[in-house]
Image 1 (cartoon, rainbow, N blue to C red):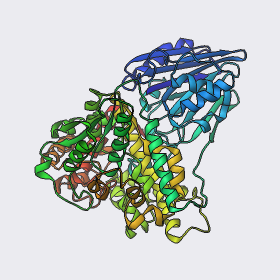
Image 2: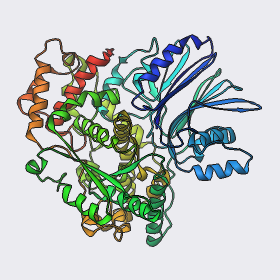
Image 3: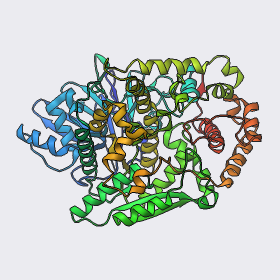
Image 4: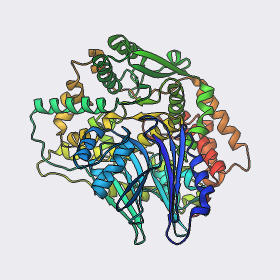
Length: 615
C-alpha cells in the first residue's frame, strides 16, 4: 500500500516544479512510510510514497519499462490478488520478469491489455501510468473505490493524488465549498456522492472507472458494473459457490512478505475470516494467526444492551481465540485519547467524518501497526449478505431516502440560518437518491421482495459501504497499516447480487444464507449471534469530554463553526446532552456524544483547512 501523486501539463515544462511534487509526496508520508521515489520529465511529474508489503527490492516505484514503442512509467497504490493468473498469461505472451512484485505484473499487464487492464484485475488499486510514446496518462480505480484517487485541473494542469491534502500543495488549487459542497457535507455526509468531493472543482475517479488524459482532453469510462440476471443455481449449488468464493478471496488476500493479522470482534463476519485464515496457517505450517480486538476502558461496567448493540464482544472473542488457537491481542482505548484523536481522524479523511468511530478505528490501527503491516477485516459482509436492520424494517424501506440518514429536518436546522435559506438539503438528498436508484437494472421475474431489496442493496453498497471503506482506508493508511477486505471481492459481490432475497435472508434472518454456509465452520454461538456493530465506548466520561470540548469551542466568539452552523441549535444540543437532535446523525452509532464529537470535527476542519464558503 502506498500513496501516489502527480501532474501533467502539455503547454509548459514541469521540471522546475520538482519542489511542488516533493511537497505533495510529503503529505502522504503516513501512507508510505518506508520509501519514496519520483519521475519528472517535460510534461509529466509522478511521485510515490511506499509501504513495503510485497518484494521489498523488486517493487520500488516509480517503475519504468522500456519497449521498442516507448516507455511506460507507473505509480501504484494497492494490492492485486490474481497476480498468479496474470503472470502466467504474460509469460505465455513473451513477457519476462525481474521480480515477484505485483507492481511489475500490473505494469506489464497494461502494456499487454491497454485500456482493458482493469477488467482483468482482482484487487484494491488506484494507479497512474504515463505512456511516453502517446504522451498520455492513464488513471484507474478498483471496482468499489477502496483505494482513493482524487484529481482537479488548475492552469492547464491535471493534478492527481491519493488524498485531497496532496492536491492542495499544488499552487493555485483552491479550497472552496459551494452549495453542492454544503449538500455533501451536511445532507449526505459523512457519506459522499461517488465522483464528488466537498470541494468545488475537485473530483475523484469513480469506483470501477478509468480515465485517460492526453492532448485531446480528459475522458473517463466505466469498466465494470453489477449485471442483473437470473439466478439459476439450486440452493445447494449456491451454498457451494459462496463457500468457494469466500475461501478463495481470503486465501488470495493472505499473501504478504510482512507480518499479517486479522481483526476479530467475535461477530459472524470477522470470525469467518479468522476461521479460514487460521485453517490456512495450519495447513501451510505457518505460526498461529495473530488476531486483534478493540475495547474501551470501563466498557464492561457501562455497557447497556440495545436493539442495535445486543451484547458485548468479549465472550465471543474468547470463544474464537480458544477454538482456533489464535495469538490474540486486546487493544483497550481510554476516553481521553478517543477524544484527543478526533483531529487526526479528520485530517486522515480531509473533512469531518464519523467522529469517534473514525478516531477509535485510527487508534486501533495505530496499535495493530506495532505488530503487523497487513490486516484483514470482515467489513462489507453486511452490505453483501443483508446484515443491516434497514433491510428488514418497513419504516426504513419506505422512507424514500437513505435509511441510515433520515434526520433530514434536523440536518437542515443545523445550518446557519443564512446558509439554510439558500441550500435545501432535502432537495439535494432527493436528487442524489433518485439518481442512484435510476442506475439499477431489474428483472421482470424478480419477486416483489427481491425487487425492493435490490434497491436497498444498491444504495447500501454504493453509499454506506463506500463510507466505511473510506474510513477504513484513510485511518488505516494514516497509521501505515494495509487493510484488506475479502468480503469485497468483486466476484463474490457479483454472485450475491443476483441471489434471490428468499435465499439471501434464509429463515428470515439477517445474513441467513451466510450463516447456513458457515454453520459447520464456526461455533454455534457465533453462527447464531445477532449482528452487533463496530464497538463504541459506553463510558459516560466520553460524553462529558466531548461536551467540554464543544462548550470550549462555542465560548470562543471567533470560532468558525458559528459562520457555518446554527449556534443556537448547537447550544440546545449541548444543554440536552445531544437529545435536541432527536435522531441519529448517521447509521445507528452517531447519537448524542458522537454528534458533539462530529461538531468538534467540523470546527477543527474549518480552522485547519480554512475553506472559502461560496453560497
